[in-house]
Length: 110
Image (cartoon, rainbow, N blue to C red):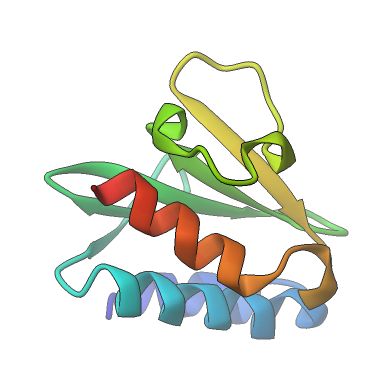
């Protein structure tokens, strides 16, 4: 795992850290050959192309998905109007079931 990503998580507000670590682990579980980088001042997870990112804010963090058009199940939960990305805002573990994130990752990498 990329040390810069670890540092990014450690600098995040305390209430976001655990959730970010959980999601990071889910990303690695679902996509074992994922590569972590810092792009646009945020963690971006890639495999041949960018797949997912997160960005910390004061009261939540954004979990964003590239190739969002591949997501069919629970796609209505995604926010945004961008052509190539959609996201969810997470404030605590109850905001989104982690199984949904797992399923989204599976759909994106099909």
